[in-house]
Length: 73
Image 1: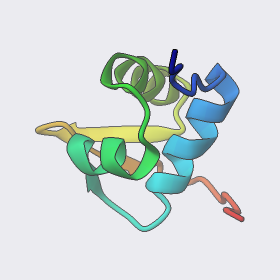
Image 2: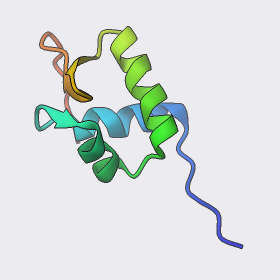
Image 3: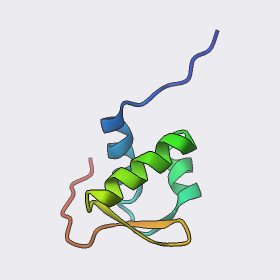
Image 4: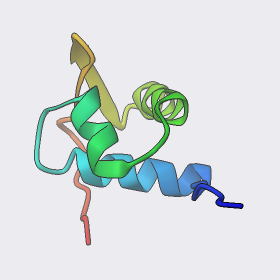
């Protein structure tokens, strides 16, 4: 029996932030980079948006909030 890798919420947030470190991304590109299941990704994006970490600029396009200084390893 195969099992999917399930990311913990912290991991999904970190992967999502890293995927956005290059700039503006559409949700499909974020999903392709992170390989996070879409329902988890949507919840992660919403949580990051509500905390001011990222911005939804419309049309399911996201970017990191301008005032953030995030180091991505």
